[in-house]
Amino acid sequence: MADPVTEAAVSNASWCEAIAERLISQRNLFAGSADLLTVWSDAVAVAAETYPGLALVGYEMGAHLETALPSGSPASDHSGSG
Image (cartoon, rainbow, N blue to C red; front, top):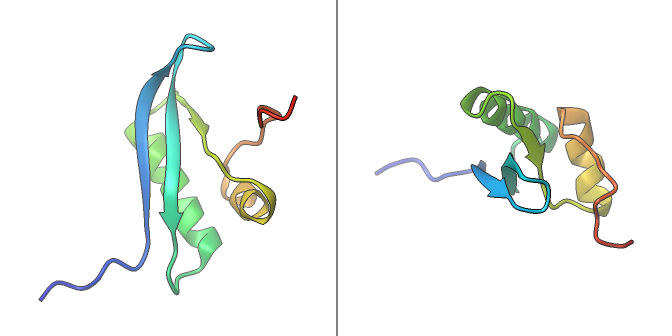
């Protein structure tokens, strides 16, 4: 029997019509019992290696965003709040 998945992240590159650019979308990250910052750092590194030169975007807010930032995830003011 295979070991259960304990941490994961989903990344994909897609076209963003609003800025006419391809972006990496990082989402559905979970760490299980692993260190969340380590999982974020690994996910950012794999996404950057898989899609070199593309900007990384995510959907984190509040405490989740604060955890993602030290991993190398960029912050922006495009939260949709104005």
